[in-house]
Length: 182
Length: 400
Image (tube, rainbow over all chains, first blue to last red; front, side, top):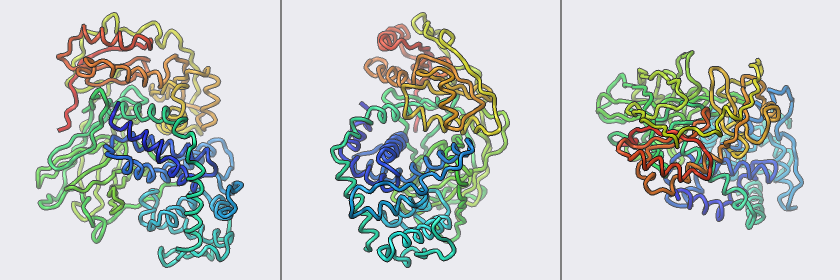
């Protein structure tokens, strides 16, 4: 058995719940979260890295999840364009919440377009800076700021005063005055 | 921490509890392991969806590149190199500025936003050899895919971007250096796996520009890719190693989808198929390869019309030939790993990889191998898989 295989198995058996939960913040449903995690696992372990332990591997996989998610969204959009379909991928697909206490946040996240959702998760859950988000998602910093700005406006509308994102921490306005909820 | 951050944390915690004890590992471990094995084999052997693919990494001096490894010690093709020399010798700094602070003052990061819908990974880049004339340091970067690059003890991950740039980011989440690699028109480029000529610009304060000269070998028309330049075809295939009756010609039914304006390019189509079909459904497909300007897709569990419908759902409506075959990606995976069971083969096989065009395994053994024993071991190891194979000889990769 190759050296990476036991580590991969350990990550999948012992760390997948946390990783799936992270992916689920980004995706529309559990099944998509599983697909994203699977792709992230394959991507992370296929690159010849020598993971010494499951912690390191988990960190790589976790970091790959947002990128994989965005890549899938891009591909889906390209495919839809090829079919002349005018479908907003996940843009307004709101799922039934699974816990009342997080219902609003789940619904608010689901109301965001995928790129904005990814930026929000990386900013407010992972506590990354704008440059770090830009690097991870391979976007320009200005684009990340715009996504965060638009998303903040929408979240503020949905969640009201409970969305108290610290604007000063990122330099991102909480509410974009120019754009409302799409 | 505010309400929103708290609730995001609560949401993730609740989901983690909900997913705990789930069947993800049981359901997905097999497919993930298979996909990783296949990709590692492809990366290592230099054979991908097409019949020819070049992969090259090497490590020289203080620069270490990731070692692609597989249990059989698959070799790396040394098929192409782009030699880049810095225009301004840098005596006391790495030629590629990946040290801390490299993106700070003086740097001119090249940030290009990916167009919406752009496919990451459309471009497949060659091995790039960079040489610092000042220090004599030489290294090579396989920039087809993300790689790690260590310079002066600092490891960064290089990630190609579809706009022709790629990002070098310290793996610990630190500094980012953006590099630009510009492909030069090369109309006769063999599907993504033969390298274009490239120019490399390091968007950091030093060195400013690297000039590149390409040495690209002529691609072979042979369905079995050239293992290395030092490889000498052996007298095999022997009767045992001749493709069996279960070959493509025996079972092939083809359907051609003429190229349309809306269908993605061959390269894009391959990337879509690789991600959407081959990786997730390795038992249903037999991979793909390029034949001229057409992507030939092997379907295993569907007839060509059903497969065409699947491709159409992915936006691929032209430029593709579908053919029905028996061997799936999973079959190749399983067969390749079965060879690990032989201690002797583990010692003498330099690399092994699927040949999706000829529907067989291409096995390259070191020249000193006992070919008779190789054939016996291969015949034995692959007996239960009914998979054709051919054998030739070549050297193991040299990483140092």
